[in-house]
Length: 335
Picture 1 (cartoon, rainbow, N blue to C red):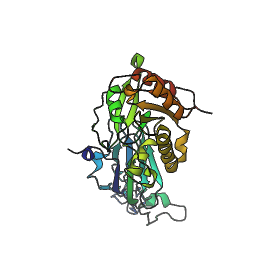
Picture 2: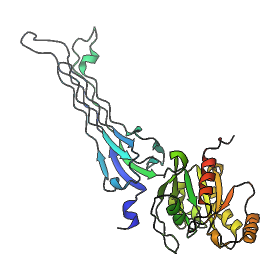
Picture 3: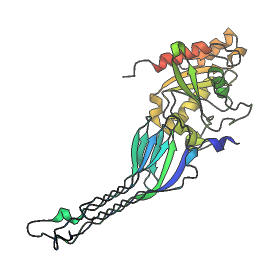
């Protein structure tokens, strides 16, 4: 099975909510009452289409063939002021971090961030009022009632932005997947070629005293990603929700400062707000460095951003990296 087949982060579905039921214009008639007043009930509400957050889901795969979502209509009102039955709402479960956009306008109509959170994606039509609502002193037997409101319909685009505490950012083949497999139980695909990781991989880092945090290995970035090159916007979308960005730069890079600057520029070009996040720099594959080389690399790195030399293969400084990430995650918010 290919990677693409079990991770879907964008889906388009056609949604139509239920129409409201019509109000009844019934007049009371029975063996004791020949000419009774109005007793028509209200129509039932059309069914909503609702998004609901579910922590057990991590992809939109289950919606891949869920192209048309058609909710049922509310039933019409009837005699004896009986209200029509409300249409049964359709609940679509989605992973946390899902946003829904209107395809036509591009407007964000829903955003799911918590388990069990429910947001109405498409509202059902209201039921019409029965003729019993229109009785007045001067009009004792109204022979009219309201029709139900029509439901709404349209194409919606669901996008998943992965929710993780730490996002691994770096060029392809920087060692992100190797690091993820070293500090978590995740088993990402690892190989010595560009764009091995085509989808986000999540792993939980076990910290001290039963504490843990979530880290995401994201597809490698390339120069021009903000303009859509490589995996472009599809990759950058997943970075937006990470609290910390861990820049992974290999020790054998020809120019560590230039590599960091390119990564930073791509993030800024995509969304300037990303520069408000906390950054940490990790120099990977550091087992091949001596102290002299480490000192030379340190001079290239930005002074205000914490950095650390690690090796995922030998385990060098991985515990210190966890400490640094945990400390940064729990630091007081910036003013």
